[in-house]
Length: 325
View (tube, rainbow, N blue to C red):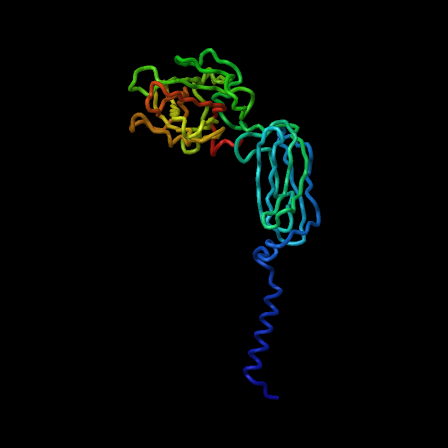
């Protein structure tokens, strides 16, 4: 029997379509992720009392009928700390969606009850919740080199007049870490043309962890060294200028300027190579850093009558990347 050429092509095309329908889908179901979510298994966790101080982690699980765009948010009920992760899938896999106690930004989590919530931006009103309690805080300083977290007064800390308030008592900024922070404020006093207000020096031998070698024990590979500091800004109207200095081998060597024109606590991370050298011929040598200085300056006009202020906390060096609160 003679079969027409067009008929053969039609059969071949249908066969190809059938074969394609059996090919595994490479991406999420776009129609499904914009549909109402049908929950097959609610939100659960591998533990409800994680002790992050021991390195424990907690995994989360939930199962949906089909792919959904979901956002998991963990919030500290007392601290207000938050950790957020999102994805598109039909399951939150506890082997992949794991929390080690870190926060996405300041403040850090405390020993406190927390609420884990899964929301679906494309399906408002559908929310899963789970109550937990942090039994042990994550050690954010693991592997870090501590300059100070202002845990105790250090006699050898050098400062100028007017006095520095330690810990902050007349201010009410809350505590990004621990129970103390340092508050600096005032107006320039060395002359109408000078922006200088105050300074604070912290030496390696008198830091919260006394490095008796005289130097902060940092990597020789300067590309992997970071300086981290928690800074409280009082908004754009406060013309504060904070200069951070690194002294190397007893000589002032590098500086970095911050204008904290935000409101609230913020973790500021500065790569060592971003500090500007006083002399362009100075070579990078982080293993010779023996002092960290904070200099409070003013960008205000007029200088002499406009007060500036800043609060700082938790100064540490990290290796390989920024500090994770």
